[in-house]
Picture 1 (cartoon, rainbow, N blue to C red):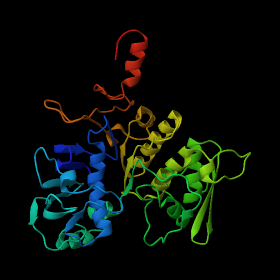
Picture 2 (cartoon, helix red, strand yellow):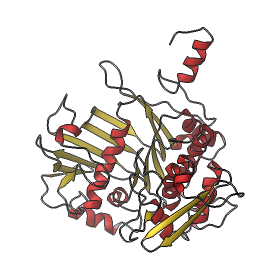
Picture 3 (cartoon, helix red, strand yellow):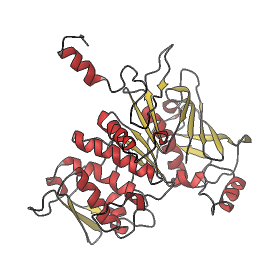
Picture 4 (cartoon, rainbow, N blue to C red):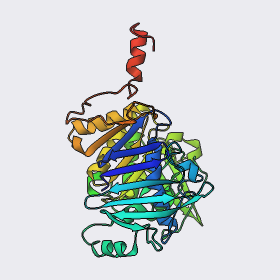
Length: 385
């Protein structure tokens, strides 16, 4: 599990030291750096997946497209380099990347592992020195190396694919995660329909295979939900319904929220213990009750041993997590909450409220899910903003 991510001179951060938990919520104002944290991890993942032996960081690939060096460097304090540091249970990995102004990929300037430095490495495997990878592989029977967890992580962006008439059936040897827009979700579900899900995530009223568990989990969000997924040549035809009184409908004729949350459910129920999942705005197109259910689902996933990092603007998602903690489904110390603010002189960029075992949060910074109270006070005549 990742226990901390540090970003130095990356995008809007001169220096960010961010503790992580099994379930980490990234909240805060727009353009304050929440997505940047996920993008830093996604950049490592993208390079490891698309070019195993690369000695450069791929800024533009199938997962993220971040432009050129000036777009990813904190230009207030640097012109051409940034550093990502990741802490796990036993090791600390640090990468420094360098690029010229017009470079659309960046050179690995140096790697440090538990303080041992490798300057200007000529050969890397998954962005690590080969001798380090060999050491990690020899220990794989005890723990999956961090590089492999980063290579296999799932990143789901806020811009997910809209409902489709048909979905491309993709090669299972090359498609193992749902993809940044959920574009591979139907193939992942089709090929793994009979695979068991983690015991802690099994809902008792359905068979333990992935297809039926996805269906049952979706029913917690959309009562009456049923799913049909049929192969026709090189395509998959998805059928959905939300009532036992109707037939299956093409996704384009159903509520938009169904297909927006379905990739998240498929991703979590396809995961193994120790996997890392990054999710932007899981609440999109969901009713408030569904948003709260998603929060509880994220807590269930963390309890099952999946590490979840969620960027959210929804107080309902937060409250779903709080309810899970209060109901003893997830210990409070397994949740980290970070509130981001735009960079300003004299202000801390990230504040980290904590939660107790009753789901109470110790303090609520200004702007931290307080709009309901501000509006209520306004209507009561107690304030003007």
